[in-house]
Amino acid sequence: MTFRQYPSSPALQHLVAYFWTLQAGGADANDAAYRFVPDGYVDWVFHLGTPWKYHFPTRHEHKFQHAAHIFGQMKNYVDLYLPDGSFFLLGVKFYPWAVRNIWKIDMHQLTDKELSLNELDLPGLTLLEEQIHGEKEIKNMIQRIEAYLSPWRSAKLQEEVSIAIKQIYKSPLELSFSGLNIQSRRLEQRFQQEIGIPPKLFQRIVRINRVIEKMIATPRCNFTTLAYQFGYFDQSHFIRDFRQFTGFTPSSFLQSIKPSGDILNLRIA
Image 1 (tube, rainbow, N blue to C red):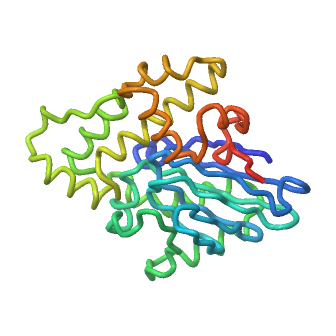
Image 2: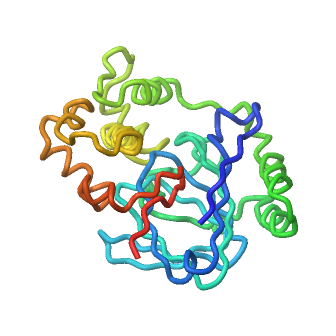
Image 3: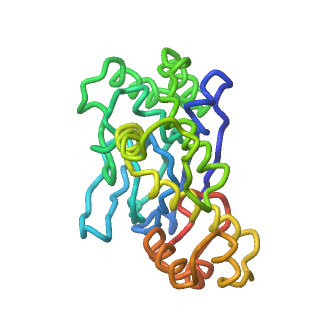
């Protein structure tokens, strides 16, 4: 399994965190299963070969992906099954506010779902997919996507949501928006529309990803110490949160992980 990241152009860095590719062949792609842990971002994925199949374990649901699709915010982990033979895809890692600004999608309707943007009959998308499949170089594919996104270079998030997200990124250990000139209920409604999930859940997802980064950097860490370091009331709360987003206990997670930066860094079969 080979995972690579590519930077976005400066004009789009407020929308696109980075581009990425994932390639596999042989044993890595023959019915192998990997786990995606929610990270708070939104992924636009182009399958340049046979699409994978995904499974929401909490819903006992299996589906095949479209050739190109958007993954919305995920509340729980998702299992992805690679096809036989070679496997190659290109992804756009959007910041959580980007998709709402670009395509005016109510992100709450996309939570725990994937959507083929062709279903929305948006202009230019069919042509873009054809252009990407016609290119042989990754850099040219990325240029095609950035050219498509260029009309939204000046897109901005609602100020209150933007400030709240920046506060969560800065300090995901606690949730406090007392400095915002907006009622908490209205902020939650904005979050549902703009991001797809409530601010408290978004904060928990950001926090668990910070925990995972720490565990990868220091795999022999003490879990009780880790729980208190990241603001959990006790170790049982920490383990419950960890199970929800990864499907593993912290110790089992460390035994399964491949610390390579891969978005599918947990092989489960």
